Image (cartoon, rainbow, N blue to C red; front, side, top):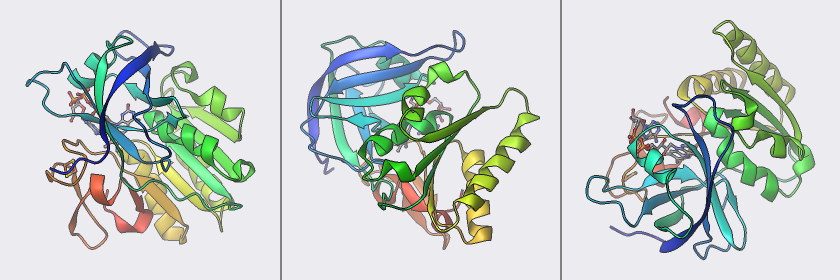
Length: 259
Ligand SMILES: Cc1cc2nc3c(=O)[nH]c(=O)nc-3n(C[C@H](O)[C@H](O)[C@H](O)COP(=O)(O)OP(=O)(O)OC[C@H]3O[C@@H](n4cnc5c(N)ncnc54)[C@H](O)[C@@H]3O)c2cc1C
Ligand code: FES
């Protein structure tokens, strides 16, 4: 298996953001920069702590949330065995990291760009905003279920025009869908970039395809190798052919993938 840029790095910090309840933890994990000079926002990294045994043979994929000269930051929610163990790492623990992987989002300068984030889908947009050549052309919409304090939203909202809507009850959902459609229509002629849960992405895909709007969708699939070697992450493209999300994505044109 060819693994690009595979490095062992040390954990710098593990920070829990505001928590929603005892069962859901939101974690910002900061690692030493694995020697990467740059990345394209929307790309991801595979992480596997060195001390994981055979019971967890595979790494876990995470969007690169931030990269600077010293550090690599990912932001995740604890949902299973891997993430709960990543959340319990300590400064100084060693983690094997490979990446930056995948293709990343387009970042055309001076183009109205609508960032549509659902829940943990906000993670890649932090670095996107920080790296964009003309951030004054960006607009962020964030749909979330748990309180905003669990996400890095407020720091992002200081940098670009932003709005957030919380889904408190199922009745809130139609309002959120309507607002997404309105924002996409207002952004006509620009580009929409989306990351979030599948139903959220379907709303965006359907509206983009129906209206001939330019949109890119970042997909999440369970992954094992992250580099196109195991076929663990396939989805169907626009012609119904299987493609690997890690190698051909995770970002796809809205009309080029089946959700
Ligand atoms: C390109 C990419 C970028 C990602 N970026 C982020 C990120 O920035 N922040 C974040 O919180 N999560 C992100 N994810 C999802 C993250 O990889 C999974 O939450 C994580 O691998 C789960 O590991 P686990 O061992 O805790 O869960 P497991 O014990 O492996 O699984 C627990 C449950 O989650 C499901 N699951 C596992 N992996 C995924 C997945 N990739 N997508 C959807 N459901 C899954 C399983 O089917 C199972 O039901 C990303 C995934 C991909 C493919
Ligand atoms: S995760 Fe192995 S092919 Fe995509």
